[in-house]
Length: 222
Image (cartoon, rainbow, N blue to C red; front, side, top):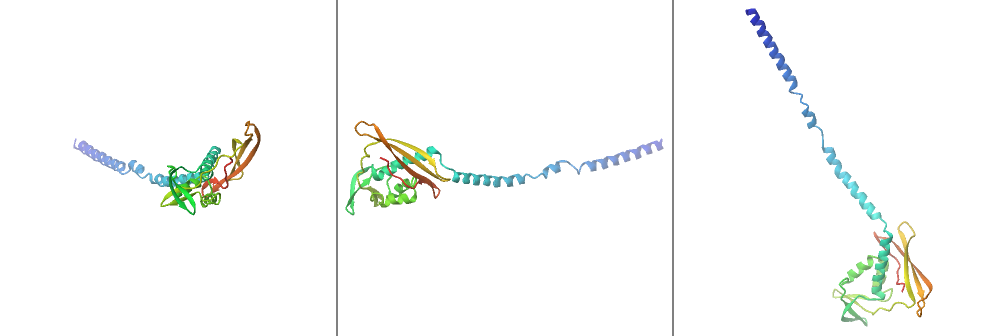
């Protein structure tokens, strides 16, 4: 009986020891530790570089973008209106005058343009720098606009449209990688009966200069 109890006790101790060793093997090797070391940082580091590349590509694409035909024709119509301020229909005035170098200048009351700098900005929106300077300096048809005490003044009364000019047709022609022409055809009509007797053709170069698209030569066709 004693021998049987002693054998049972030994077996119990052996089983307890095996159980302890098995538990020790299981504890230090949890699979969770591997997932904690999986790095997410490389993804975050790549994002700014990818974003920067995308922005740079967008900027290059925007700078290199050529205008659409309707945009060029829109610039032509705007150029006609602005050029007319110097030749056909001066900017509106309020009647206040200043005499300078023998010329009478009237105070401009237009809400669209109130200073010489604003006038220059309008010109540069559709014309090259050279043509803008020619218009402002009076090389085209005398000095039309001057600034006195920060206010814009205009001289001259403009002119009438040329007689015998009828319908105007415009089309865009690409002449180079960054150069175009707006070709303008004007019907010549008989003033008595309005019958078309011929046509007049003009071509105005339009190109990229200092990051701006505009006309390098221009005039009114009527």
